[in-house]
Image (tube, rainbow, N blue to C red; front, top):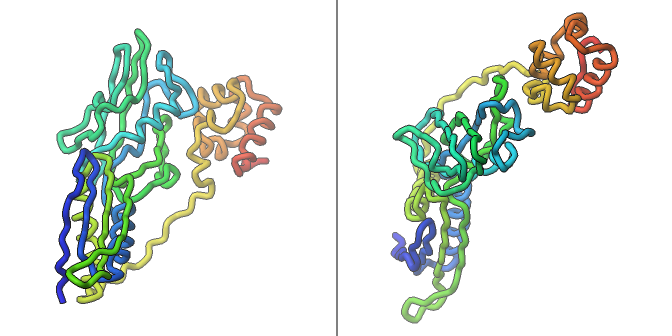
Length: 305
């Protein structure tokens, strides 16, 4: 028996819609609500900024002259920028502001295939004479991606946690309703909020299509080719190896000396022979002890220790 329920939009506002789905056979209110809510929040594709490179900034734990916010606050604001982008490959965007006042998401220069959904979002505030120049990487994805999951070797390129989901909130409500003399039908009220990168109507339709593909695999199974696993080389240092020497808690004098000598990252520092480190200006045995202690706190040992 084919279902004969209706879907009505009771409230339709910007980035929000209240859908009423009725009448449903008893129990199907919960069935649809649970399935749709899960897919809406976890499985819809979106786009987000994944890496940032700011001119004059080597890491996030610092400040930029003339910017009211510190770099960490600026990065947190960048994570709130919402994009419409359906491509498969990462794209670059730039932010170049040299005038005093508010820096907004709309100031980001993007390619024609990318649209900023919340251009009025304030990213930072600049004083007179200050400049802000940054290069951003925008990627499409699903769910949530940790910054530590993205390998990065370039100094000054800061990876960001990314939330790709274009849906911010879903609230279902199931009530009893009647059809004629039958009173045990379900009425499902589904409220959907989005980032603006997709409309609530598009989100609901996309979620339903995803569920259909899963159920279709049950009805008409399609065998998948077996892919042999490829061995991936293990980086013994993990994410710690990508940290800059400024990020491991070294005294400023020691960190600057190492950076000037070419040992900008933990990986380069650990792999350097002791003789090479001893040649670094203003470094001695006591400085090496300080470096060893800082690395130990990150779970890394000097090879000659």
